[in-house]
Figure 1 (cartoon, one colour):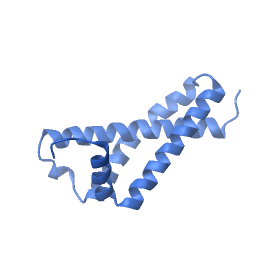
Figure 2 (cartoon, helix red, strand yellow):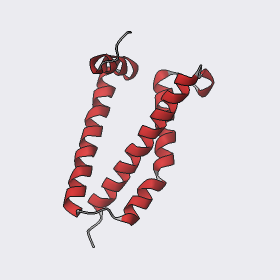
Figure 3 (tube, helix red, strand yellow):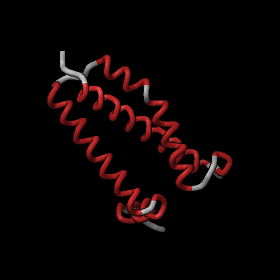
Length: 115
């Protein structure tokens, strides 16, 4: 593996998660992103109350994403072998935290009426 390309990453993720789960997650992430952009354009400002609640959900997203990836890959925390494993685990946690925060903020904005 001399080059890191997008098609190669997609192939690795399809192998890790399975083709159907990977593409379902990709479509879900795309739809949540579209809904988030819609909410931002519709409201034209961030609600600090919703933003705070979304930030409070971030640790749960980080933990859930790390547990999900460990479950899918049949690995545990004791299987961490080196610095790159720690970096990947931190990246997975960060993506899960941000993803859940965006989902929580978007859900709150779509379900609650604007004041």
